[in-house]
Image (cartoon, rainbow, N blue to C red):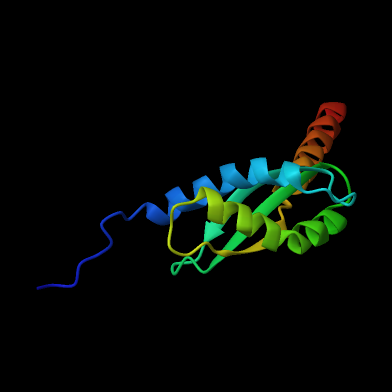
Length: 122
């Protein structure tokens, strides 16, 4: 019998999506003054489901302090995921600040500057 691929090739994406939604709710339960207004922007789950990189952005608060607080609360959050997810292995959470919005704002500022300097020349 040939080796069979996973019955659900999108399973990792489905689990990552569910983790993202559940963490968005669970983070509200974390009582840490370092935690600002955090948004979970993406979750990447390893192939063996042992680890998950959780990318977040911050509307209000210090990104480094928030990352420290989230990684400190990772055990609590993982325990909350155990109760919500119906999978054999709940991944260890690794929080990482997502700089995508910062980069987008910087690019928009550069574009606006280039457009304004071009219109002044004309």
